[in-house]
Amino acid sequence: MKTRAITGFFFVIVMLASMLTGEYTFTLFFSVLSLFCLNEFYGLVNNENLKPQRLSGTLLALSLLLWQGFYFLKGTEFGYILITVPVGIFVFFVELYRSNKNPFQNISYTFLGIIFAVLPFSFFHAIAFIDGNYNFHYPLGFFLMLWANDTGAYLVGIKFGKIRLFERHSPKKSWEGFAGGVVTSLLVGLILANYFTELALVHWAVISLIISVVGTYGDLTESMLKRSLDKKDSGSLLPGHGGLLDRFDGLLLSAPLVLVYLYFIFSY
Image 1: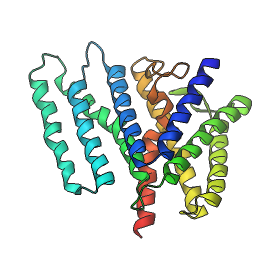
Image 2 (image 1 turned 90 degrees about the vertical axis):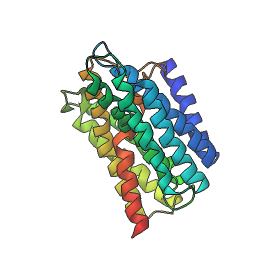
Image 3 (image 1 turned 45 degrees about the vertical axis):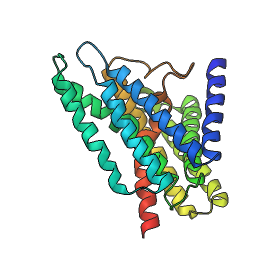
Image 4 (image 1 turned 135 degrees about the vertical axis):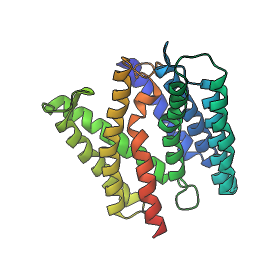
């Protein structure tokens, strides 16, 4: 428990520092974080029958992250994202020269790593620039509500949890804990509305619900992945916490939907 607390404390400090010190630090930190998550994903699914392309997948992720960084920080044209196309095609070329018995599974999981472990962080990164300039209020508010949801769900679930939420994939989660997480996240969203006034209270409330509900399904999805591979943790990078994907599973599905919601708010 002590190791878990110390690891969590320092990791939270580093994350907060990345958001508060400006757009360059923020972009660098979450780009590197997504690459670590991608490497963790490839290690998680790698076995005697499945061999995703680590190098090709990493190059594809880098091409996406570099474009995104230059797009938001330097204002490069959107069309430069096309650089990812030849890198993506390269994955198919590489597999032709590998002597594995499940080539299309390897290709599929190489691309799935990008979708599952990199794109969510790209969407999260874009949230910070949603109104045209870097604003740490959006990513910071996101994480405060996400952490509130996780904490509320854990505490209420431990105390009152009886009805299992989705026992097949996560035996410890309960409907009571889920409700506790929703309420706690919503309360934090209502508090944020008083300080981060770029969004009206109703929008912070909606975002908190997206994070709580969809974030829970992201957690369940990651649990489903681990159970399908007979793995307990996604990795061992964070002592006492498991892997990075274990810590960011709530972001994987919720960040893209929060970005979509914010996009429509600022577009209409």
